[in-house]
Structures are given as structure tokens and as C-alpha cells.
Image 1 (cartoon, rainbow, N blue to C red):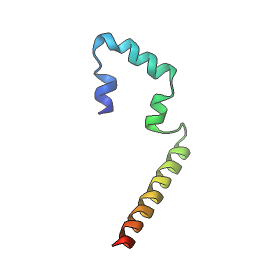
Image 2 (image 1 turned 120 degrees about the horizontal axis):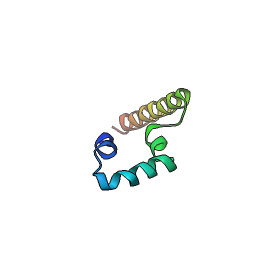
Image 3 (image 1 turned 60 degrees about the horizontal axis):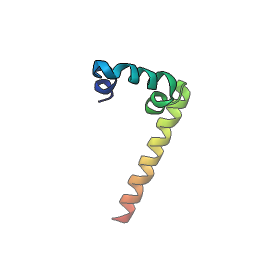
Image 4 (image 1 turned 30 degrees about the vertical axis):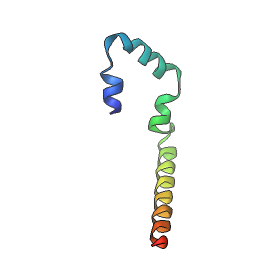
Length: 61
């Protein structure tokens, strides 16, 4: 989906798209923080949250 939005923008909108990506942290927020270690920490946190959520659902049954 992001590929379509970013790479297939109509020609008149491309300068706006480029300005947004060049001058805002939007893309980093979508992709993750700058270092691989930070991204791995984020993924670990997501895994922990999913396990906690699943455990809560299992205990409610």
C-alpha cells in the first residue's frame, strides 16, 4: 500500500510528496526508528504486547 502511495503518486503531487518525506519524520514513524537495534526493540515490544493480549483473552474464556 505504501509503495503505491509513495511511488505511484500523480505527477502534479510528486513535489508535495517529496517535500513531506524530505522535511518531516513521517517516513521514520512508518518504518521505525533509525537504528536496527531500535527497530528490533520495537518488534520485541509488539511481541510482548501480543502475548499479553492473547493471554488475557485466554484467561477470560
